[in-house]
Amino acid sequence: KLKNKVKPPTVTIFPPSPNECRNQKDKKLRKKTLVCVASGFYPDHVGVVWKINGNEAKDGVATDSAATRVDKFYRITSRLRVPAKDYHTASNTFTCIVNFYDKKGTKPYENSTSEKYLKVTQGAKLSYVVVIIKSCFYGVFVAFLVWKLQVGCYCTIHPTYTYILLPVFAIEKKLTILLTCARWWHHHQALNDY
Image (cartoon, rainbow, N blue to C red; front, side):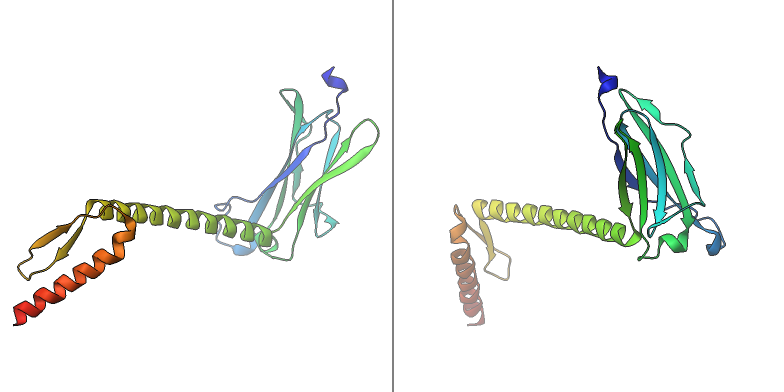
């Protein structure tokens, strides 16, 4: 039966919302809220503790009074509210520890985060997105170039803007076509100067 199956929690820490407390005028009073979610565990015998740099946090901690059942398992949420300056201090580490009783004893399951780690992670994600966008633009440019080379190359050979179509059916011809265009342009310029 399901009630006999013990399943430990998955512990996840969510960073504060970027918009939290922006409307407060006094920066010293600004707070940031970290959210710890322990989910997917059974049975519901858990306790949640927050630590800042290894020291247990007493102030600013708010934990659900009891775990909530979601489908076949349980979930519990805990919040830690800290001054914004403490959260933005790169050396500070915030740890959420979920003490889970698995019928044999209590075992801690934890997750940690810090502003420095979050910045690095978010920066990496942003860089990845930029690389993907650049790759897409490059791909579109190359596809357009290949299409133009397959259709043909237009060269200006006369000041009256006459155009000659040079059919091209292979990319390898690209350099030859460009050189031919340059030679024709030079030749017609020389004739005009003459």
